[in-house]
Image (tube, rainbow, N blue to C red; front, side, top):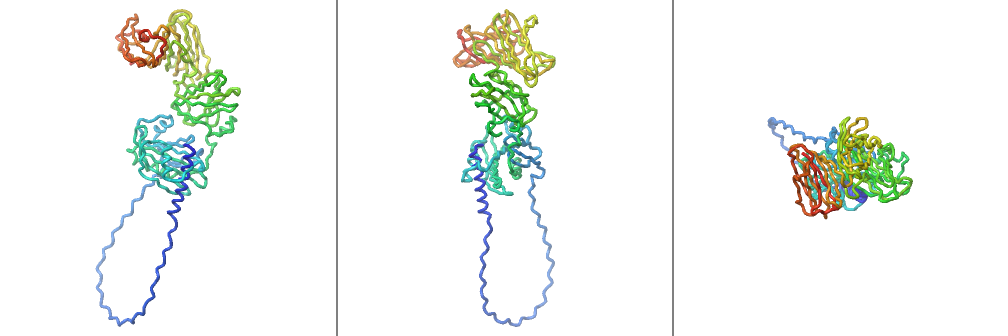
Length: 579
């Protein structure tokens, strides 16, 4: 939320308070009605004696008037939650979940909380969630209540084509002033009902903005509950150290504060700059069901970066900084939090080096920066593989003397891997185990003679687990492919490259190759004797080609990618699926 919006909301509430004062003043004293002076009254005449009055008949007893039905108190079984960082205390139904990191999120079910925390957009919103963002009252501003709430709606931009259902409504409770508005609109193609509210405590000069969402079909269920939660909110003093003793760790932030940490979200790449000895901090919300890859890459040759991940107390979760390269990318792969929470990424220049850099936060297995990319003709294989305990994974390739492969093997989690190269007679040529548990292994093998070779990946001491592999081969090296593999290719002056794939009878392979914009390619499938079985060239220049083939028998098949009419020096990306 921008500071201007905070200021807007606070003024709105102060104006709301003035409105309440104007409307709720004491009622005026009624004007006295003058009493007329009585005229002289004539003396009464003799009154005749009364006659006997008949005994009255029994009057039926009045029926009982039913008592009005009491409005149920939805807050009766609520449980309390406190966000010390923002200075907010509230109560919510026990089945709702509450999470706080810089702001507070409430959700009506745990699955919705997990989706929000992971940055996932649900295909269909089921339930309700509320977002509370607090701030200092002096950060708010504005002068017209209705236009200010409209600006708040625009600023939060949770929904499009917003139509107001009710409000704005101004109320006051226990010295706090609040304005609410209910609207309906559309978010991510779904109809939603949105509750907007702002609350301020004038004495503490603290404010909070709320946005709550629920689908129209669940409005009757969740809107009253959200309004009941809103009625329990109490604003107090903010505790900027409540997220952990980051500044007591001696790390420092160049005179800044903890809130100077820049948020980074899953799938996002940001550009930053380090100066002198001051680190730069980024914050992200960690989900224990996910593993993360974090890559920082300098934008110049003079910057040597060091990377670390800290918990809320400023303690390193990596046991120390990662600084594996000089003026190259630093990568932390497969970081998996033990629980939900806020995590801090620290980026600094080693030995005082300065300059610009990029930082990327991705789901584990998708980060390949710094691990080698195609810089010329050849092939790059990207794959994710799981090995059982005491198991191994084999990547077979056929090479010619003078060829070369480089493999970067990246474990997910704390798996410690061993990577070994054998020939077809199981003679060992090279083996590496340089990384720590969870550390990547890199192996480069210069092919000594024509023949078949295999790259073996196994867990140290027989451990099992999942890993990602990025394997780069020079032209002439033929890689074996499997289902779910991704291949980046760069054709040399010969205008062709080959791969092999093993299929069982009845299995169907689907190959989709997408060339660069100026390249027209052909996919051809051959049998073990290199007889052509099928080829496709249906797309235009730069268009994707898809070949689908069902194997008539078990065997090894060759995939040939070539440029149309012998065209060379084109690039492509190919995906492989086997069913």
